[in-house]
Every structure is written in C-alpha cells, then in structure tokens.
Length: 211
Image (cartoon, rainbow, N blue to C red):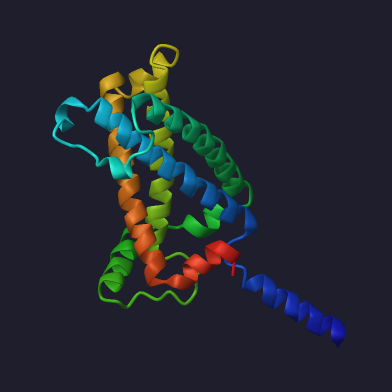
C-alpha cells in the first residue's frame, strides 16, 4: 500500500508541473536577450533612422548603449545569446514534442471563439498546461517572427558575405524595414504577454518555479 501511495504522490507531483526546467531556463534567458536587443536596437535606430521613419525617436531612458558604437556592441552580444538560446529552444521543442503538444492544432474557428471569450471575460485559465487557440497562435507566430528577425539581422550585419540572404529580403534597405517590423511585433507580443501574466499571476509563478 505504501508503494502505491508513493506512486500516486509522485504522479500527482508530476501532473502539477506546468513548465519543465529547460523551458523556464530558456524563457528567462530569452527575456534578457530580447530586452537587450530592443533597447540597443532603438539606440541604433536613433543614430541612423530609416528614411520613412525619420520622425520617430526613442527616448534615451529606454535605449541601451548610450551611443551608436556602444549600442552595436550590446546588440551583437545579445544577438549571439538570442541565437544560441533560440536554437536550443527550437531543438528541445521539437525533440520533446512540446511544440506538437502545445501549439497544435490551431483552427480559425477556435481562434474566433477564444477571442470572443477573452473579450467577454469568459476565457478559462483553470488549466495552465493547455494553451487556448489564441495563445497557440501568438506563441507559434512569435517563433516565426523570431526566426525572421534573426535572419534579417544577419542579412544586415553581413550583406556581402550573406548576399544571397540579403537578396531574399529584397536588399539591405528593405531588410532594415523587415527587421524593424519584426521588432514592433515582438514589442506588441511582450505587451500582451506581460499583461496576461499580471492578469493570471499563477502563470508567472509556473514560469518561475514550474508549478
């Protein structure tokens, strides 16, 4: 009987694990890298604004690097951190089957229904181990955006050595606009992500301690 009780206790403990250790580690490393990338990227933009966005300027209080050279150093350091951590996340996501279990399937009708439920305050957050359709769309979408922002950044960093990649984006100038658009999408995702974490505090707790 004691062995059965121990087994039940172990099963219950396992069932309570919402976010496994590797997910939590890559999540927080990603968070640090992304904020470094955004802050330094805004400083780079201020020093060399794009033609169609010359009227835009980011306050120095939310930028990183202090000047163009410093911002570039921060940006490149964060770039490597984001790339390596992102590759680890993608590899483990596919190997463990997490992406398949968490992000699929996604349906248009499910997205519409869950959006309506969220806007009317009827969307349940009882089971944090299961993503609703809106979450699936956001998380799957941000993975794609993350890949594009890295590739467009590489095409801008080495436009000669990676000329074929730069050409895919339509040239250096267009790659900058793509990179900026991806940054804007990431910022929008972060706003929603942080707001939801504040609205559902137990989801933040799960990302810190796993349960």
